[in-house]
Image (tube, rainbow over all chains, first blue to last red; front, side):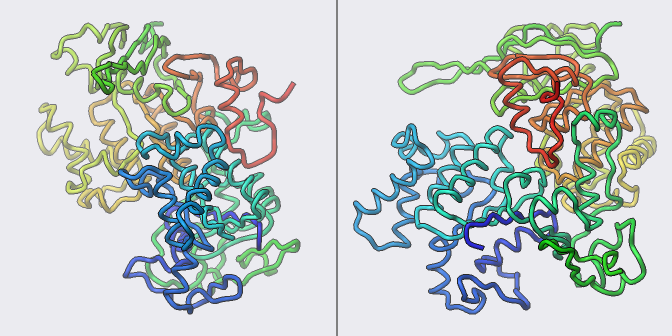
Length: 295
Length: 269
């Protein structure tokens, strides 16, 4: 939805990065989208021409990845890189592009705007590099920002700052966002809705507060239980083993029958092995894909 | 009882040549002191650039401090000769954050675990392999994976392998430098449980360096908070969480992403 922050939660192998790349048809050459549709502003992105797609990529939909240093050209000053990206999408006169670039950098770096714009990536900290990329991303006024683990390489204090930046972009610009992460705690108080991926299947989704406070899918529940939480009630659990999900997540390389989580699920039933669970509406927009809730 | 590790006024300065010949030294450690008891876990937390990793590499004898002393089992290792260090280093092992870059992808898993034993030169081939297999089992990697190459392992499995390798020479102290940071949350839980088991069965001492304060608090008996190369606060875990004194500690506590809305002990009366 416009102006919404959707949190996509998934661990390694869940398909979360593939999902992000697929939206803009950025899969590697051996990736193939079999079926389904991606509707953006009424158009199916899987069916539009590459010329139209190029305009949308970076223009209407912006992407930010995990390692900021990989997305910044080492010999371009960050302001210059952003200006070039903007120029690729807008054929405006030079001074208009310069003004716009400076404007977005000023939003992300209210102090030291010019110094940051003239810096090379190696002169900036991880957090600053990510901010520079966010500035570059919003320069074209996208309506949707897809961020794939944008804070994973940053320490918690910087992480919190960047999440604050995203929130203020939503407030000021009405920017919608898909925030992909493997850390559920980042989504609390940040995302509006949350979607949980496991081995390429969506297992649960709904309003963030609902899903994070009372998860229903066995995977989601087990995942949240394996997080260390220090609070007065949990103090006795400190220095004790954490509850773990048995087994290991296996790559979803082969199309399989049944529920992807079944091999590791403590609540599994025979039907789970044979059929992919139907979606069950739990009310309030909370949906879970599990046979346990069919009864 | 004598602490297993005593760090006293550790200073580490890196000389940097600025443009025009002006030298700008970078002070990574600015007088760090603490002790660590055998069998305990000390967590060192702090922002990026606070000096945590430099502390790890100095303690693991990978770097020599500029000034200061490091006592391991009562012996001042900053004054030790290279021969003595060669005997001491195996007892202090370091686990890195990125399993992919610290394990040779072209070797088999068995090769990797056996290598330190080969270098040590005390055991014959059969004994080395026996020990290697038992270590693999101990860290939860089955013996039938021994012939696979490290590239085939997941992040969590690679970290288990790094731990197995670190255990080959019976270390007393394990330094985990952001060892869990690159792992998925559910995998972190599995590795943490392994660490608990090792501590219970082998009496290992852990120095857990991380910016994940929640995990640090779960594992550690004591927490030391670093900022700009100094320890600004140090105490028993619950005390640090409930009554943080220093601004850096409070900032770190406030920045911890929390899933539930139950308040941290620090916010309770």
